[in-house]
Image 1 (cartoon, rainbow, N blue to C red):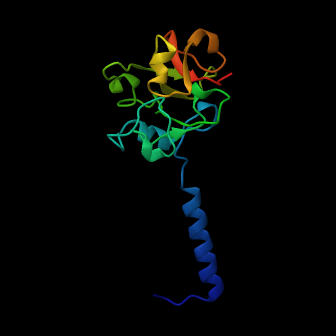
Image 2 (cartoon, rainbow, N blue to C red):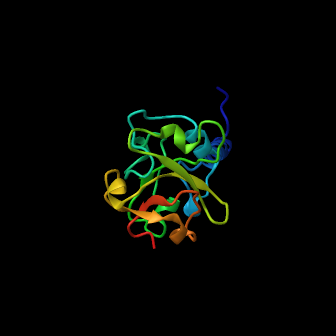
Image 3 (tube, one colour):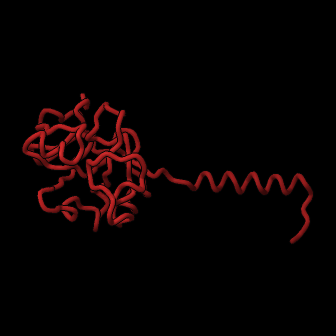
Length: 163
């Protein structure tokens, strides 16, 4: 290894650190449901096969099937007191919500009203459908929450404190 003067070594280390930090993308949905390229990469591949699905409460990315645990989800509205698992559903192949449909659980893609961001949410017919997955959620008619998100489905599980 070539010996560099102390000032050159410090500058090299500072530059390397700055480049490393700049290259660390966010690992969750950003405020307002906007997503980044990391979310799209995660949304197309399962990182934890035993992880929670969309709308389930989480404490860390590792709790979720797709590694996205966020308190900024569209389905939470103004309630940032909890975080939920989800994924971006507008990232192309593999990111569709219905690939995760399971017995008794159907998912749909909800989108921000301004078109900046999308995510998967649990479909519902009653509050009980939602509370079986996340006790802090209720079943809401998506038409009543058009200021938060747009959905082709009538009932979507949202935070009880979304508005």
